Image (cartoon, rainbow, N blue to C red):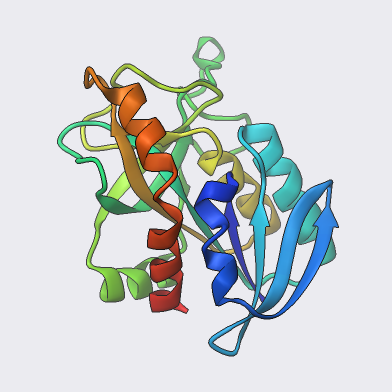
Length: 211
């Protein structure tokens, strides 16, 4: 079974229309849909916003269900030269708000964990062959970022937590994101609010292409 996971209903709601033979369940008080897309068994999960919500739900799912691979979809803030509406593939994910560098760790590195979590190479190659998108680094933290971290990268509030859990469970994961707002632009907040409500159809099209 392939797990498709996003943070907000605005990111996942249209994907649900692709699913046939739907079964609705709840895990950790979160809504889950199980069924098939193009004859492929899938589970669609919406975690809620933030690292704890993301890690909690993915852990609960992987502890109970036989998941073959994980596809994360969602909105991200982008750093120049990325553009609003641009779709990107994540090749590396890390935290921007975790810092034990005073003890000799790299910034973003959780002890006994890698600094950067890698997308599964086979999934990355397959998605790239179909979508022809840029590969970028994802920075995750529990804050809505309004200042630049790294040019050409992006940031969210869940992704690296999903990658960390997938790493611990040894499950392949890939994340595909859409730039909702360009960080540092004067209209960043308004751009995000306007874009959030129109993103789900793009993720529906994306999933239809790669499954």
